[in-house]
Length: 200
Image 1 (tube, rainbow, N blue to C red):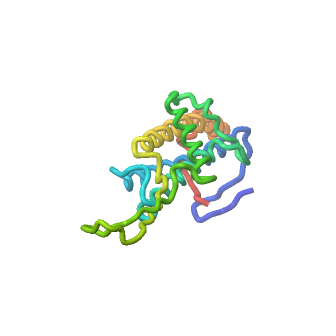
Image 2 (tube, one colour):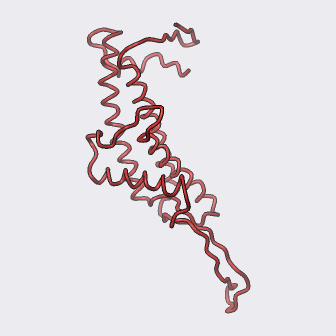
């Protein structure tokens, strides 16, 4: 079935590798969003610690970025409607990357998505005005895990880049087969996937 758009005509088609390519492309798109969130997080958190006063506006934004990154990343490896990635099948990761993978998933499961963890709490202090010895009131401080620290966030970003590189190779392999089927023997996914994008 063809559908005309202002940029050309798009047509549904069948190929035995099409579903695989679509799955890989959506996973890659999610991981691109993870990269974008981690880059924003690192810009915001430059020189700051992993636990901050949660009432500070920058803390809320940074925590939202890291939370989004951890959840979207974990979703790529979770069972569901789509075929999940298997961390063991990604050949270009180191043992240290695999440990980080488990750490990110644990953070998502134990902190961002479920019950209160040790990294979150409220503390009540006695407060004395500057120059006074006697407390004049209580001071309440809410603390929350903003992220996993800048060095870990940089490692997380580097690991996601490795996974995207692995996916790009798989997309090209399956896409090349489709391109040859429709555009001839020397056709490649890279050449034909960039032409005529409809965005609809």
